[in-house]
Length: 228
Image (cartoon, rainbow, N blue to C red):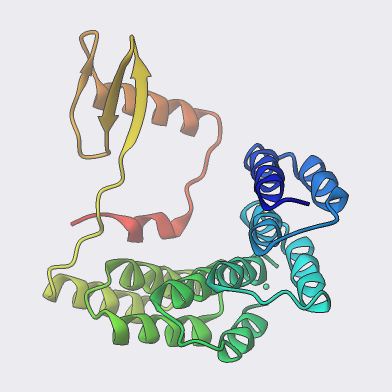
């Protein structure tokens, strides 16, 4: 099959995966007799991004059987897959087998999995690896504090936040956007804006009240995401 056709089919697999249509993506994937690394990575990442860890690892095993040499994209997807299925130890063993030196993105994937599955020991180790590469990495501090909070290790949580204060580290503000009358509007939790005379904060407070009225209970660790 010509290379350009393989690229086109890979794009179709990616499109289905992004829409959450993993069965359709897999049908196209299985249909192809000729696959390149992009095709394999697209299917692998599609499963990983939607939390289908075991299916992602199946694809990776197929890559190995077909002697397809993985790259950094493959490694990140596999780590994400391991994080989705309580296998943080397996993810760590996988990192140790890397033919290249892991960067902080790799360690951040492991830390994220540790946060999800409450693996304090490995989470602390992953955070230390990130901070040895970039001592000012804010996300590592935030995720580590959340790992401690999940384990109800309040002294350790407070210590991490103390370090963040001493280093004057703050988490970058996240922005959301919406389109209204052919214009794009950006806003964040700290941003005060008005839409047709209504204060955005009033709207958000009203929505929050409705959530609580409906029985919503916030995660306890959310308080450790707050910005100073």
